[in-house]
Length: 420
Length: 78
Ligand SMILES: Cc1cc2nc3c(=O)[nH]c(=O)nc-3n(C[C@H](O)[C@H](O)[C@H](O)COP(=O)(O)OP(=O)(O)OC[C@H]3O[C@@H](n4cnc5c(N)ncnc54)[C@H](O)[C@@H]3O)c2cc1C
Image (cartoon, protein in one colour):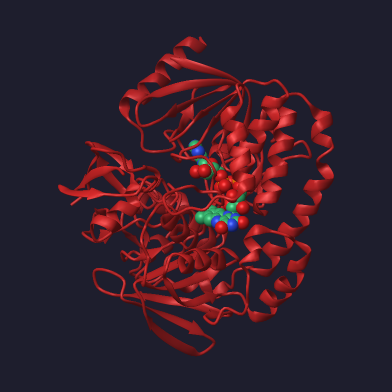
């Protein structure tokens, strides 16, 4: 069984939703899929304890109501299934979708770095904590420490406080000077994420990094360091993330060139692979406004309406300048490369310690002899960490891109046969 | 209000609750035991890290990307 789309879009965050609407309004038949049960991506993640802004609701409703858009929830891309076809899977079935144009709107994930104790239950990503709370995880009266880097720490703190948690410390690794310069520019950018940005939160500390998560079977406290000063705090949760990294794996697997660790695109949001476009945070971090306008441009171009796309170039340029500022001021301090102890697990799927991986010359060698990156997450966590820690460039993933049922994989063969 | 079972115990949650949240609402929050015997819990919250994988009605799925449904049988991995 297969399905055809004029324009196939992977990812239903701001970029994917706006791309779908633009392409459908130009007359294209659109298929939009996302691995989450509900549309919205990261910033507009819906759930039991989520609060979705009206702009997002409106965009989502327009996509839902459009007769040219078919949306598939809880659906992941498993493999390439021919020259213009992808094998996908949802909880019930697997099938092939053929396309004329493909738009990658796969967004970004958090950079998670290993430090002693980071595998303890109670430790999550920073954006991870926010996502879990939106999904209904209770944090009432819990003491929470948030650490790492970037504006997401404040957004996450805001969500946690709103749901009754006591945020005892926000530890930002960037120095005060850089964060203050960034904060001074904020009035120029009416950005949602930044509305929560306040240097005046009583618990906010710059130049402060995580040293260890403490506890035996679950988290009981954290150790932080600022200059020479070490501080220990008791807490029930630690949320720790070191900024965002673009989800480029699918683009890489399709042969798209990367630049600056993101999918490289031209002014039309086109990758160097014919018929494949990319928009939003998989092309570099820039926030939801940039993702929205890039999505619209990609949607119009994929549907053949270049004039409409070109009219949006000015708007895109404005938000690109903002992205540049963000990346510059939250640059990671090199000391973060040495957070892990020799016995700290780097690969959480195969339980491979840092020292075992560090003993190798490159990722391929480390993988073959230690099994790091060969477990269920397929290196999405440890491979990204190793890229930062050892400067080992990430390699294109091999199919299946995600743990997949046999019945789904069998369809690859019939897809290959029908190609011939 | 979905009614489900978590490791055999009944649990009722609000609509829109993920299975990852249910692990904390109806248990100690943990999802699986790692190959070297450590207990683990959801980490990334967004379908990347696979730490939250559990068995739902006999099928391995990610707790953070699955919404609770009536009658679901969720088993954490011992
Ligand atoms: C954890 C986290 C929390 C964030 N919180 C905020 C916030 O509070 N405020 C803010 O302003 N910004 C936040 N951001 C930044 C945010 O990512 C952007 O502002 C915006 O959401 C980017 O939109 P996008 O459409 O490019 O990508 P995203 O919103 O990331 O959407 C991408 C979607 O594609 C899906 N996807 C990826 N790969 C596949 C695949 N292979 N198959 C199927 N589906 C796939 C993802 O699950 C996701 O739903 C957050 C980012 C992260 C990572």
